[in-house]
Image (cartoon, one colour):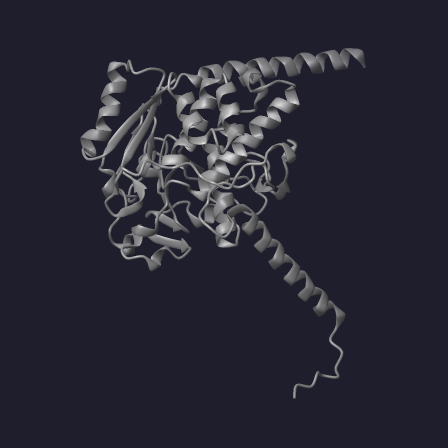
Length: 389
């Protein structure tokens, strides 16, 4: 018969035990709320998210809830239906062999045609679809109309092309999976050869993907480093960023789910802060495109999702300055040379260049003009305040 010890344990130990149990339960409930117990990607939009707070400044973690009334957003737990007729990439059974791109219209320039053609030249068995300004609303309506009307309403309302183009790529791969490529990116190596066949040529930083044979069969998302910075210590800013001009994903990726929900929440908050609808959002209202819908926003969402999946904080120590692809959970993070050799100074010892980005986008000049207007407005406001004082 078990007899309890007559010695009184110090109260501080019991407090620590209670704190540990409470923290464990909180982590479990947070992950359960986001991911559930199945593979359904949809969760109630604008649920509390954990994210980095300030761009390239001191990073803290917090739970946040959208100011949107959740009672008005009863979204069913279901997912868009991917095209069942698209085969998967050899060696990557979760990712469809389809290349997605977007352009203003089907009338591509000579350079755009040359860039785009490299994808089918290197991957002749893949399918290819070009989504244009005339068809992107129809695509989003078809895939999300019955399950996420909030997304459809927001997407159709957006008038800023770059915000819409950014959101589109996440919505497409979340619904159908495949490979996203900007129209000004060229493919230098077949997608089926992007990942090393030998597990010894890969660094495994967490997760159970190594239980698959071959190892790549468990992969659900492939991303690459645009900027490869070193970790600067606790409380420092994040100095690495993933590319969003090219990436590959399985349909229903939980990581892209988090990215989409975060962007939708952020854009809705912008409308509330400025007293406008989605149609009224302008570049003057946002801090920076990369922070709102671009690669920085995608980076934060993926790191947040991985942190919850692995039960620990994921940061640059897990993937920066690496020579090999890094695997975290079901995500492969390619070294800087893979998708952004030019930005990283063509580093040696990081494997071949897989994709080259040619930076044709015209949105940056518009964003700079908006920043200048915002800066002048702030200076004028400050001058009036000083005059009044």
